[in-house]
Amino acid sequence: VNSRQPHKTAVVLLHHPVTNREGALVTTAVTNMDIHDISRSVRTYEVDHYYLVTPVLEQQSLTRRILTHWAGGRCLEWHPDRAEALSRARCVSTFEEVKTELIEMYPGRSLEVAMPDAREIPGQKTYAEVRAAWEQERNAGIKVLVLGTGWGLSPAFHSEVHTFLGPIYGPLGREGYNHLSVRAAAAVILDRLFGAL
Amino acid sequence: VNSRQPHKTAVVLLHHPVTNREGALVTTAVTNMDIHDISRSVRTYEVDHYYLVTPVLEQQSLTRRILTHWAGGRCLEWHPDRAEALSRARCVSTFEEVKTELIEMYPGRSLEVAMPDAREIPGQKTYAEVRAAWEQERNAGIKVLVLGTGWGLSPAFHSEVHTFLGPIYGPLGREGYNHLSVRAAAAVILDRLFGAL
Image (cartoon, rainbow over the protein chains, first blue to last red):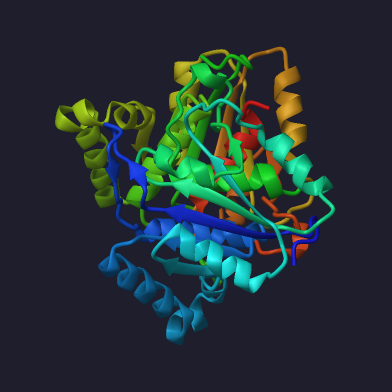
């Protein structure tokens, strides 16, 4: 239970549809570190669900094997904190499936898709704005934070998005370097939206 | 050049002296992901130096080999952003060496060692307090943020520390889960201290 707000929350890591360095539509590979680090950040910031999305069947079975491996036996015994964090993670084929699952789990709640982007897009809100808006909302909804891998989410995905969030900048703002790992970006985004002040 | 403050800054990732789950003094292994992710976060938040510290000679040569690999050739050509981030990273044997290097590089400046800890320790300051204190300081110093691996820095290290920083909490505060990866914690710490507001 998240003490600060009534919403249900999910982080979604998409491996498709994303772009490569040339802007072409690609499917990236799931990495073990993205499973572990983002699960731990999700758990720390009391996010309810973490979805890894890939259409590639082999990648799905590998991801599920890793999740199953940590859910029992000596892993559970020796690393209960790790097992607890990974228990919030699931692997599915498409973003459509994520939405269907969440709507079935939490019937009657509105679903808002928020997308942080390392590039600037017109209409992006600041993290403080979104944090305040979600805290003030009276009807408990489902808040879905979607993160892209590779060189970011394909513009084809933008039609799914209700709320665009801006790049994570260091002290130099837009003049600075802007190539955080998705693991680091996810942690900072969750801290800005949900961290204890 | 960090536009917000006059200090020189360094992040230090210690692989010794740290503790294991039983509290015993151990030396952890350098991981490739700690090199890459923390270099990128260091670069994003305009931190000047990133030191990986391990007394193990084989680990030092492996780390230096990875850093050299990314500094030239096709890596530099294909991943200039990555090469730029990794160019701030260095591997040394001891924390003593880190201090000696920094004092030689920036003669006449005071050196303040700040240590975030995932455990609560009496006298810890909040990130907002330290951010404000550093912003208000008139004399440009050297600010050294020390992070531990494993189950955290050994209490034997505490005599080196001037400023203790508290755990990174999610919305439930100290009642919540508190097992971020060091990569995620580093990103959040840098964002809280140096991120654009």
